[in-house]
Image 1 (cartoon, helix red, strand yellow):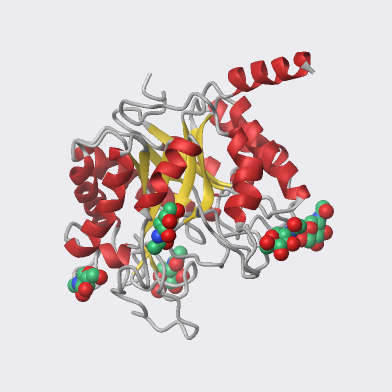
Image 2 (cartoon, helix red, strand yellow; image 1 turned 180 degrees about the vertical axis):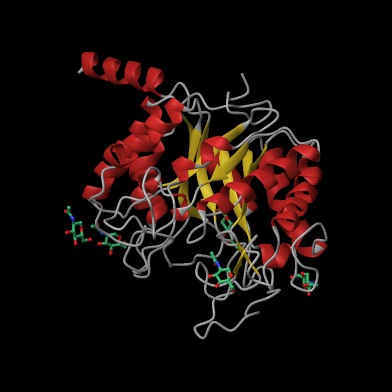
Length: 382
Ligand SMILES: *[C@@H]1O[C@H](CO)[C@@H](O)[C@H](O)[C@H]1NC(C)=O
Ligand SMILES: *[C@@H]1O[C@H](CO)[C@@H](O)[C@H](O)[C@H]1NC(C)=O
Ligand SMILES: *[C@@H]1O[C@H](CO)[C@@H](O)[C@H](O)[C@H]1NC(C)=O
Ligand SMILES: *[C@@H]1O[C@H](CO)[C@@H](O)[C@H](O)[C@H]1NC(C)=O
Ligand SMILES: *[C@@H]1O[C@H](CO)[C@@H](O)[C@H](O)[C@H]1NC(C)=O
């Protein structure tokens, strides 16, 4: 089988040429605010290590040295970073910031890249039933809504704190949805302006509407205009912004179901053509699948598709995180199959998704030539 393994190696090395960033999402900093009665303020500010946590620092060597990944997307909650009493803007809860910053600096000191991820669906003030609750940022008909200007001030402050850390990546916002696509563009542009005016030049990831789903890029979603009609208008004075895309493999693209039957290559063809047309790059910061053979196939296709299309510069798998326990971040129809956190167990005590999906399927597809040093960039530091 010498011929075929040589061929595979040759394909793998040429195919992964433009994936510079690969890794996992660390989800947990946004936890502990859900209220079954949608009671505003539930879980705020929350208890660090109990209701929320960002990263188990001891897993970094496992990820970086054993799994050879170089990117972590770290979720946090805007209502904790900017408590309601202060409002969205430049005044932070320094306790929460310092807990978050401990995770970010541990990652970047270990040589990896860290995506800062405000996990807020372009909403602020009531995360009690995310993604539905909270006022849309910049909704001028809603007197309770934070303004686009406040969002810009928030990003100006956060980026200013990280402008000297070249291994940071700014994820503008997790999954905007059900709002005018023109306002997604306006808010994204305000974030870019805030970040650049702070003097930070690192990579920015800009999301679209419709939960930033790749398959919706060229079509209306819930009556909102296609992201593709607006997002190419973004202007970054230093030319270092990529598009942020999420794409799941189950029938409704929600990442909640066990059955994978949505073809990533087929569903992404439209947005890939759009990226090419506008000379843009993208990172897929959420995707995932269940531990079954169908999903194994769909996941492999997804990762190989990103590796073979130069519009894609990276991906992060959903999700690891320190406080999932036996619960699952995606793709299990709510069954407790564990998470992608190393050591994770399923509810029945058997190995969790770290073993049954990440090690089994994903790890072998982590590109061999990821960016090791230099500023985060759409060119992979080159
Ligand atoms: C952190 O990760 C290490 C390595 O996987 C593990 O041994 C340890 O139990 C974890 N700690 C917590 C609190 O989960
Ligand atoms: C800031 O965060 C800490 C830690 O969660 C919390 O104890 C404190 O009450 C928070 N302050 C505000 C103003 O929310
Ligand atoms: C904006 O606010 C108005 C008034 O509260 C509300 O009716 C409308 O649905 C909001 N728009 C969005 C996109 O949430
Ligand atoms: C995809 O799977 C769902 C079950 O999760 C099923 O209802 C649907 O019919 C399937 N669609 C196709 C095209 O196979
Ligand atoms: C997925 O993992 C869970 C937990 O270990 C297990 O119960 C289930 O049978 C697995 N599914 C498949 C299709 O192997």
